[in-house]
Amino acid sequence: MDTKPQITVKGVKLAYGDFVVMEELSFEVPRGSIFFVMGGSGSGKSTLLRALLGLGVPAAGSIFYGDEDFLAQDEVQREHTLRRVGVLYQGSGLFSSMSVAENVGLPLAQFTHYKRDEIQEIVALKLALVGLAGFEHFYPRQLSGGMQKRVGLARAMALDPEILFLDEPSAGLDPISSRHLDDLIRELRESLGTTFVMVSHELPSILSIGDASIFLDAEAHTLGASGPPKELLEHPPNDRVREFLTRGGDHA
Amino acid sequence: MTATQGPDGTVVVRVSGEHRSAASLRVPPEVESAVQAAQGRVVLDASALDGWDTSLLVLVQRVVTVAKDRKLEIDTSSLPDGLRRLLALSQSVPAQHPPAEPEPLPFVARIGVATLGVRDTIVRVVSFIGEVAYSAKRLATGKARLRRIDVMTEIEGAGVKSLGIVGVVSFLLGMILAFVGGVTLKPFGATIFVANVVTVAMLRELGAVMTGIVMAGRTGSAYAAQLGTMKVTQEIDALTTMAIPTSDFLVLPRVIALSLMMPLLTIYSDFIACTGGGLVAVLSGTSPVEYMKQMQIAATLTTFWIGIVKSVVFGVIVAVCGCIQGLRADGGAASVGNAATSAVVNSIIWIIAVDGLFAVVLDVMHI
Image (cartoon, rainbow over all chains, first blue to last red; front, side, top):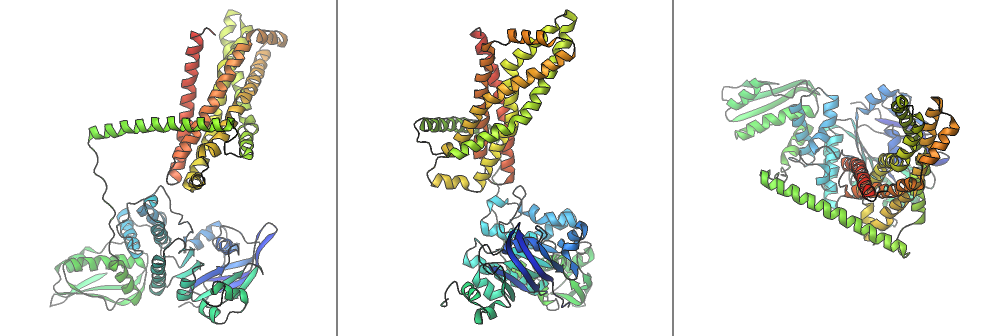
């Protein structure tokens, strides 16, 4: 298997005009890992995610997908790179005017040669994988928040992406659904070798399924720490990381 | 994917090679019929499989389903671990069945439902107007819950920012009226009466109507989209639970803004249109001084006031249609779009209808 990192970020600076959110961000996302981006509110987690997806341009630095310099790519090449990526947005980002089946089937209909009935088949399978078999004809507004998240995940993985970006996937989920989602993510990583990049505050899931992570330090405006979450909890490199991972106290 | 049948009736389904984004997701018919004919056991053999993705899972799942339906024993032990686990996952999840679609209603019942819908619409519109009237009363007694800054913002949006489009439309309209009037009146040697055509038509009817229609398209739709989005993102719910009436906080500033700005825009529109009409008339040979004199004769104060009164009414119509449609939105992006469309369509229909009503009433009153 390829051992090169899936994503390499070098010296990235995120800023809104003169307001610097983060600078000197450098880290690597190992292939096939479940990678967490942690950090307090306003530390630039979502901004970083947008930069990685090409939705926002970092003020400085470079981002590599494998060997390809993502920021130097032209539009066509970038589309090609993003084809290997699936995203679950914080608010699910489902198309409200389309049924669940149409939502999940859209990338398949656009980017594969599969016929309508074959797409139906894949859609049914992906929905079964996220535990929503039989919900094809529902519209997003008829589903609960947790179900919408799962449909979003099914859509994100419609094309069997190498990398799945999940922005706060367990926000708004009850602890049990959140646990199920963790199991599903681990299962998908084990069976398909998908790399997961997740923005999350959900400590239980960070500590149970994360194998690598970075901590964005909102006060220092740069990387506070990086490493496997469990190690960071055992040997926190600084107080802010310890506070984050122990919810503000030593007695978690 | 190939299948071979052993002497004891066991069928071995073999998948081999690189199996990514398979060209077809159809199980080959010979494989399917072999599994249909199998006795006892179906063995999935993936020993020669090099790579796979979920498209293979679709195929394998189909074979497994067929075999399960026939209550055959299935041996998946040679499948890659990951594939086996995903297979288990996709099969283990109990299918959650959505509630059944309601039966389509019989024809007569549908007429009934549609009729009740009309009644509901009337009730909703009337109670909305009632609410706004209450808000207006609270405004008069200084108890309305609204922010001055919101009123000012809406006034800016409906007033200053509309000058451009209203100006262009009115200027062109004035020119068209003068041109058509000139062509028609020329054979009678009455080209001077072009001034009457332009002035009376604009002041009495078209100034208010055209401004109303432009504002319906420009501002009414914006109101519907704003309020619709606020409904969808639960901002309206937030106001309700704070016990701030939406009719005070959201509707009133918009009604105030439009009913104040519409008369001003109409005056502006009248002026610009008369200028445009005059320009055409002068360019086709009428002397500017005579044209001005004829305009003074044509433009009576009554004509002017009729247009102004209408414009206030049209302003209220546009604001109310926009807000009522916006607040009706439910669900997603499409409902906001529908709200904006309905707001514009309803505003224009009501503007024309009320203008007709004005014409009849004024005729009866001999004004």
